[in-house]
Image (tube, rainbow, N blue to C red):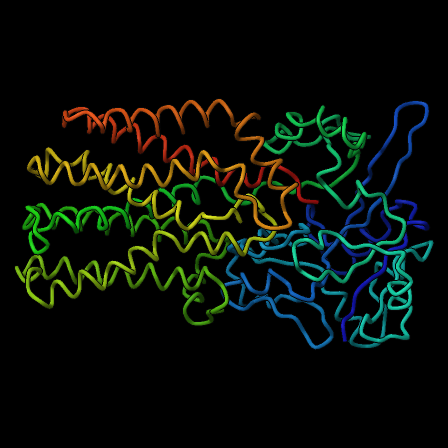
Length: 510
């Protein structure tokens, strides 16, 4: 069985009865929606056409929200409906990024995610969902797509329907008949010109749409004149997490080649200080992750109820494993045993965990099917480069305090240069790194960074300050200039990681 909907837009009158019925039936909080109506307009006065699109969860055949959920709170039932167990949700918002359809929201009272569940309490007793019952024109048609004799199967088989974002590979089970293309393709329309009865809320999304307004209207001549708000979900805490994680992993990766057991001069108190600093940033990373949860009291569910398909769970294992091995290695330094065979074995074992901690976010972001910019190819290699860059730059800043000799400082500089090269390569090639079949969405976001509202910051801080200046200073054999380059590199790196998070959420996906 696969329950779903066909929505017949030859009948829809945009009355919002479905939205109101859904809110009433399921006690949906103010400002949140399980189904809503988007208005778009095409043409110019006096020849203007207004169209409606009823948007909601697509009860996907391959639901990305289920895979990315770290606690298994989301499940696809035997009837094909994707539902949430609120008792298992930790409010991480990853499911909301996993969904290409903006179908989930966080209940502000419970701190847990919620979505359309096909009015399960009604379908279990043979009743249709509330939205279908109240629709005055019978435009909302529920049914079983696995039943070849059902009305929805017959309508789909007739070939007059289409679905949203099939290129995302989710297998949506909501199909539209005679819907305006601009209603279900957010890249074809813009709300920058304002709504019918109000103005969109001023935020980065509105700025981004205004930056692309002329281009969008020239292509599609479509305007979004009514929609609901879907503000960015991740902000400063996730940016901080990316930055502290780069430092936590990178400090170990950059320091290990110059430790005494591996032929370098770093040892004793200086090495212990570096390891302690890496542990500090690792602790900060964990704190930022927990602090961003809407239910931080349930953070331990990541281990007790872990969904091993989710890279949030796998990443937690990398972070914990790295923390444990880093602590053990620090203990061996205190005991003077880090140069022993066992100590070297611990160091080598720590390497893959440090690398995993640095790069796992690439695969977590890859599960965020709603945020195409985060799905970019090569992100794992770029994150590894960022870790080497952050660790090398951090070591160069600390070199006067650590008492590094000229040879060790020079080796750290070249490690930082390797990280800079990797980070710079993927930064400058960003426009060409789109995931397959999502090129249009990806190009819009990449344009915001290269030529849009983020361009000045990207080229000024991220590239000129964070890439070009360190490259020039690190080529000069003057240690004082290496320190200055390290500071510039860290500032530029933080700025670029911030742009990755914010630009990825800067354009509407519904």
